[in-house]
Image (cartoon, rainbow, N blue to C red; front, top):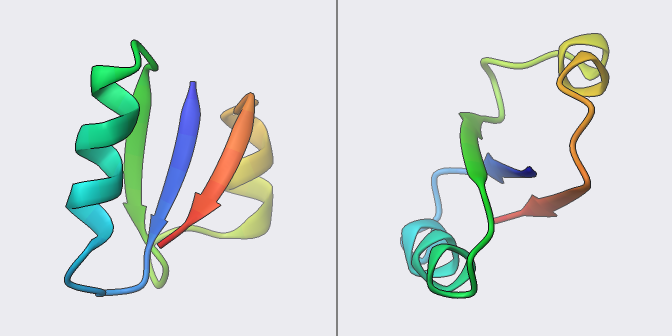
Length: 50
């Protein structure tokens, strides 16, 4: 799973769409709705900051 941190940018969901088209599992979280510990607990394969 790829964790996408949404910084309220207009292109975040464009990036999410590309990842989905490549077959990735994606979880999107807002930057102010996720702590570092919560992010690590999700055990993502990668983190994309959008």
